[in-house]
Each structure stands twice: as structure tokens, then as C-alpha cells.
Image (cartoon, rainbow, N blue to C red; front, side):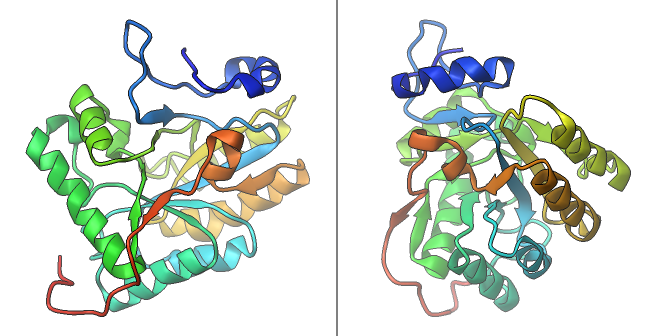
Amino acid sequence: MHFSNIASLTVVLASLASAAPTRRCEGDGTCPEVQTWDNCLMPNQVALTFDDGPAGFEKDILQTLGDRKATFFLNGCNSQCIYDEENVKQIRALHAAGMTLGSHGWTHAHFNELTYDQMHDQLWKMEEAFKKILGLKPLYFRAPYGEMCDTLMRVLTERGYKKNFLWSDDVGDSSLLGVEYGKNVYKNISESKPQHPHMILNHASHESTVKEILPYAIEELECAEYEIVAVDTCLGCQGEWPYEWVGEPQERDETWVC
């Protein structure tokens, strides 16, 4: 593992040992401009992340989270179209509530099977959707399936992205492992000592995750005195504003289609 520009966190990192996040670098030790993180830095913090939205359950997630913060990696045309009126409303509600929103690609494609130009197209379409809906360009990305390659990192760098995210724990919902499996992931985290940070993969497209696992997770984590935060917060001084401001949100027109 190679980390740069985090000398101020030396003491913290030493205490985290095997739970420290991994930043991918080249074989010669040089790191690409885009950083890849698979865990948080700050102890006693958990970042709940939700992939594959908008999926119609964002309102339920917001209601369950209350004033807690989480991170959502959105698709443009996956289970639903990002431009559907209700989805636009919910994405704006997520942003207004202070949730961190990132790109998950336009169609949940296998990026390691795409050409250079196809990768650019996947990211460009999502950026256009963010600009229209929020007036922002996303600078955080999570690759579908966690699949990464050198070409993807090159494309992300060229498009100005700051961070690419993996995860430390997976509730297994996308693999249909069941509610009890997902609950046990959170139970094991809540019972572990010392309290290492965690970056947990959930899917906003699974109703059982939203309505059964998430309420259980919050109760377990807070009983164990974990703080539930977004990914930019849990990286401490390595975090930053996850967007580029472009302008005011746009009015719907004939281009708002998938």
C-alpha cells in the first residue's frame, strides 16, 4: 500500500493496522491523480453507501436515515431512468438533505469490457444528468461490480474525478444472500473491537435492504457508538467537496430522456 500527503494522519493510520484503506498505485510507486479508497480513515465512523439508484426507494432511505448522512452512487439508466419526474425529485431531496452523491456509470456496465470512448460516454451521460438535475458535476465514482482497469483510471483522471470508491464490507444484497446475511454483516461490525472504520456496500434497488437491513444497521451501529457519515467525511482531511459547481439546476426539456 502507498499513501501520499497524509503525514498528519500517521498516528491514526498506525492504530488502524489491517483496517486501513487501500490506495491503488503503480508498480513504481507513483499514484494516479484519481485516488481509490476501499475504507474510511476515521475510527468509530461508518460510511453507508448505496449503489444502483435511483430505484424508487430513496424517500424511504431518507426517512430512515433522519439527520444521518450517507453516500449514493447513481446510475442513469439501470432499474429506472434518472430523468423520471419522481427520480429527479428524490435526487434533489437527497442533495438538499446533505447526502453525498456520486456517479456509478450510465448503465451499470462492466467497465473492464468497455473501450476508452465507451467509458467516456458512460461518464459524460451521468455528468450531463447531474448538471441538469443539480447544477453540479460529480467528482466521486464507484465502478459497477468494483471492476477497475488502467484505462478507467486514465478516463477518470482526464475527466477530473477526484476519487474512486470500493468498499470494506458488502451486505450481499446484490448476490441475493438474504436479509439475515446482511444483518449479520452489521452485527459483526458492531461487536468488533477495537472500532475500526468501515465503508459498507448496500444497494438502493433492494427493498429488503432499505426496509429491513437499514433500520437494523442503524440501531446496531449506534448502540456500538459508531458515527454514521458520508464517504467525504470519513476520509478526514483527505475528504473534500465531491462536486464541481456548474450552474443552476436546469428546467426539464426534450433532452431529459434515457
